[in-house]
Image 1: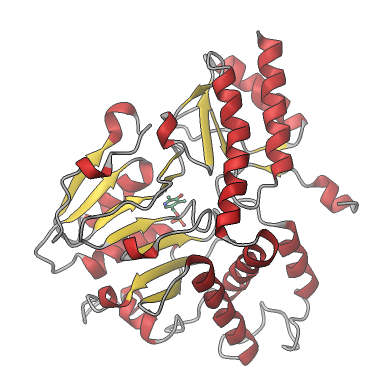
Image 2 (image 1 turned 180 degrees about the vertical axis):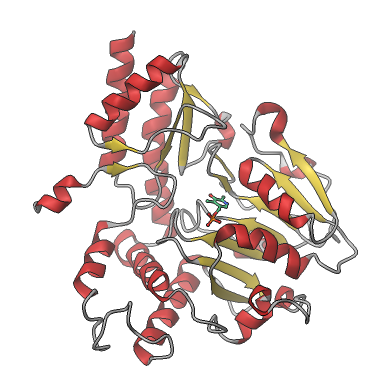
Amino acid sequence: MADPLSRERVYNFSPGPAVLPVPVLKQIQDEMLCLPGAGCSILEASHRGKEYMAIQDAAKASLQRLLGIGDDFDILFLQGGARLQFSMTAINLLRGQSRPAQYVLTGSWGKFAVEEAIKEGPVEVVYDAKATNYDRLPNFAELKLRPDSAYVHITSNETIQGVQFLTDPSSGGAPLVCDASSDFLCRPLDMRQYGMVYACAQKNAGPSGLTVAIIRKDLIERSGGNLPGYLSYRNHAKEGSMWNTPPTFAIYVLGLVAKWLESTIGGLAQMRLLNERKAKLLYSVLDKFPELYIGHAQLSSRSLMNVTFRFPNEAIEKKFLAGAEQLKLCSLKGHRSVGGIRASIYNAMPIEGVQILADYMSDFANKSA
Ligand SMILES: *Cc1c(COP(=O)(O)O)cnc(C)c1O
């Protein structure tokens, strides 16, 4: 990172849009004026042209390899963010069903998902960690899940609270629908447990403007015939995500990120190990100085992606954030509903950045003592 522009780059702990791998950014830069073979920029290329089509096919194939996705699933590239999926899941999979959809609420995003779903059909909240301000996951085996519910919805990583499912829970028969927006591609998934996994790209997988939806083909058949065209999974699946113009640039970047995961990182099992190492650096400082760093998540629910903690008072927090900025450790302020600090350490956050933050936290604690 010798050039001046790179030297200005901070360690970006933003929750999203978030840090991307530098080699990916470099490749985008290299190819910006002319995509190899296309004679124009990716921003100018037709979505029907063979160069772009090859890019979209390659991105899809990369996701299939990374997650072990078989022919029984379709991968859709959509727009509207994860929040449109809160509606689309319910419009396609719940509307017209006699059975309720069951929602597991482990944080803020799950609540927003319910707000949209209840407009479309019966919803049963089978778990709500509100009483403890969403600091924990349920014991899945104890939930009253119905094998015949329309689907069971979880949020694999609650970005604001920093609680994450690190195994793939079993719904006991109903299709499991997972909002994986902030931990997509952070670890391998056992796709056999899922009916659908969706994720906006801008946390852990690419830029904003793209949402990936992986749906079991038999569920796509549920889409009603009379929906607004864009809202129907069936339309997108039938047209290979070309029912209308897909977000071509964002899909191109997602493809580069997926390739980086495959070739440079070595797959999602390796990525998980790295993510565990990074998260441990921070959690071990929290555990060492529990009076200063008050962790939000219960130990067994801690997220590998968003590390959340508070201070005994706001004056210390201000001082902590000011000192962090000086070390180019940026965007650490937590969401107002939890307060304190949130360090988002997605796949692309280098371990050096996390180490510098961990060292700073240790120093800060020792000096405060
Ligand atoms: C960010 C986020 C969303 C919302 O995504 P948008 O693309 O802004 O609609 C939904 N769920 C989770 C878990 C998120 O982290």
